[in-house]
Image (cartoon, rainbow, N blue to C red; front, side, top):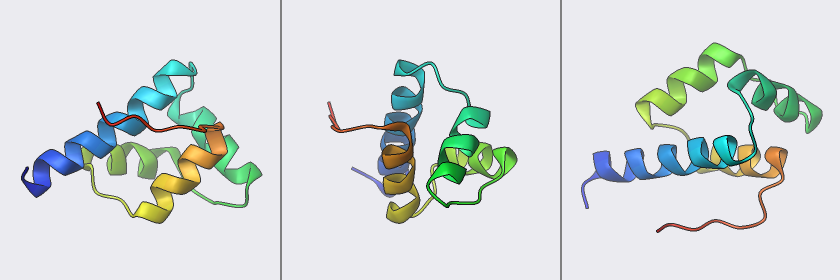
Length: 73
């Protein structure tokens, strides 16, 4: 799998987790702030559009939205 495909996969996973919970990017900003992570809605949108973000950001998002599992397929 190419790097671009991996980026799309990981971005899609995070977007799917948000959608499953009925959360918007604005909601994610609030939930991240609650765990001490300062992000702007526009930055989140850009990161998820590009598919390029750190594993730390990915983990922070999953923690903030209460995800306890991750399924790759």
